[in-house]
Length: 216
Figure 1 (spheres, rainbow, N blue to C red):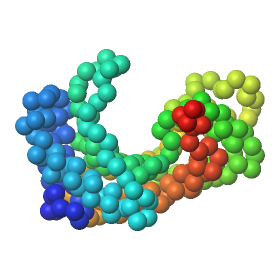
Figure 2: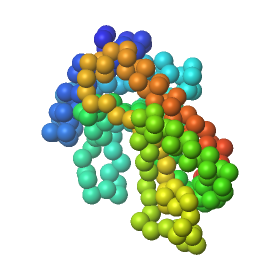
Figure 3: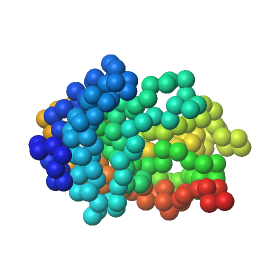
Figure 4: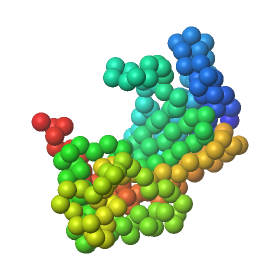
């Protein structure tokens, strides 16, 4: 690929090596020395990827590379991946390769309440279960933070007890580093995954939506 151009032709040849190095030396010195590699082989292609996806999935942004370490025991300053999003769709490149996903990675209490009300309903909950089954058949993994026990007041024999345990819900697919990461085929992988995940994104938008608490 031609790294750093506005046309997405894959991530730069130095992207995986950059993150391999960051895993070994997550320091300001390493970051400062290798920042040109990050800018050309990681960030610029991510911006170009999101721009290529924008006509179908909407405007996207790249997450900042610095970690928020204020309340974390881990004080390493930099994220060991580059994430981009066009909510609720997400894409990430790292030393592990490429990951594409969609869904709600965090839900406020009011969102969790609406989610569980919808899942409890036979029509809406049954619809979600069917959509998730189709997503899994398409090769995506269903994931999310879950309770270890059932939510309070829920029948232990509820047919969708597993879904009711979820506090977040998202689906994803990952590819190990390969030649396609550095080619335009990478765009097709992300677009195909986001398309396959769209029924889940639409269900969440219809039945959960944004947090009302954040608007107060």
